[in-house]
Length: 162
Image (tube, rainbow, N blue to C red; front, side, top):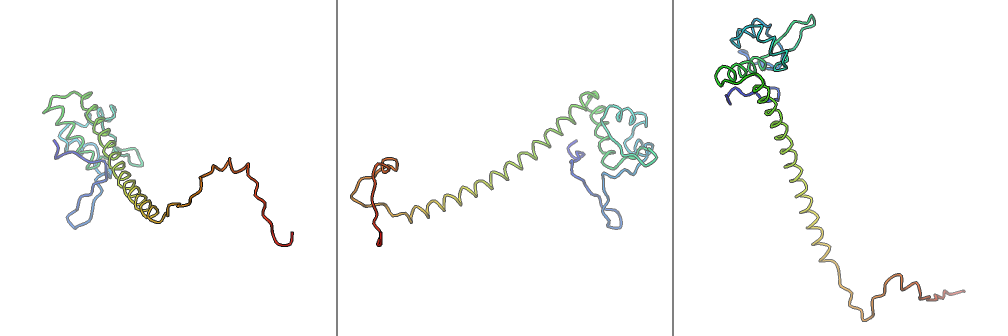
């Protein structure tokens, strides 16, 4: 089953002449897709009605199934025929796979952000050490006076010519 799993990313196949083919492009009519997936065309219509598959449509409204759609149909067939799942179970499996894919992308994004923040912390720590080394402690003999206490003192400054 894992070998048939399709990722959400656009996968490409290579044709006989070396060109890349888009696996998400709708190319099979319903009869061909049904034959490739080894099921009746009416079954495909039922899966579409349940939201298990969403084929593309031609400008005239004809269902067009992609390679990816056919693989998904084969997975549905495998889950129902070989594993004994009902369609509600298949729907739930697909929902959980989508959630897992979403969470995986979030984890990747969070790990990237954590690496960026770690680099920033290291940069700031280095800067702090450099600044700390440049600070000369005050060695005066006088007391420290708070700014607000200094307001009470008036020191007259005489300038030449006043």
